[in-house]
Image: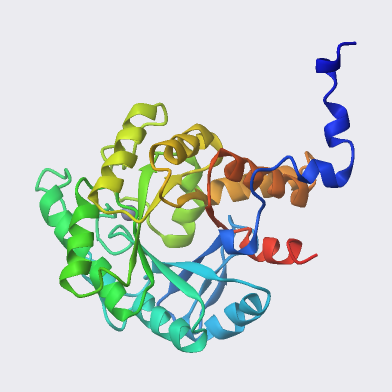
Length: 328
Ligand SMILES: [Zn+2]
């Protein structure tokens, strides 16, 4: 055999195998998505998301406290309003007595070092379930949608969110939110994380169960990207960086590792986030339950692929598990 044929000596030992990674997983890379509902005492299992629950504000301490003790550094909040009056403009989204704003204030008070991001969208709060305001014919009316989304984002930031993360995919919303944060005196304090490349995926099903956010008619294909659209994703990433995004996100993750790598290449000076979405999480669990692979081994492989592709921040329902696994 030629000298140039021999590679295995370089990774024969467990330690030399570890050295093959350019970057290693750390606890700080994980951001935990949390569903906050408007029943203050709720702790309700979500059947399609193993181990995940909808939480009421009064239950947050018992739930988050042990995770902070294990090294949890960041969360992203999703509001799940079950009892409010929804309307065409998503009025309850930034209700001062709504679950998200109450949760921001509660978590800030309880855990001063915990970084709190908030998903920003209208679909959980509109009576039609779409992510923006609509024309009479049911199509998205972009300018007032952007204006309203920016208003909600600024109100979350005013309530104390360290990061606002618009997931609606409306054109122009990054610029509008950045300007809104600046005008409110929060431009230098609040991070703007853009769901820049969010694809119309089959992997959001369990989330829609959790958040009750399926649209009442139609679908979100006019604003979420087609799964084939690599060029469009690259344009959206560049646009959002230009409009003032501080972090670029790709969603979902596993079928879109090439897009994560594109984001890392196109915006090398930004943190790159990816969302291991509900369907990916459920899929890893389902495969393990079916005996296809070991859960922990597959969970590691799934997120290590994201880090290899270029992700520096991973939004994952596996966060509590990784806090355990990375302590061992
Ligand atoms: Zn939405």
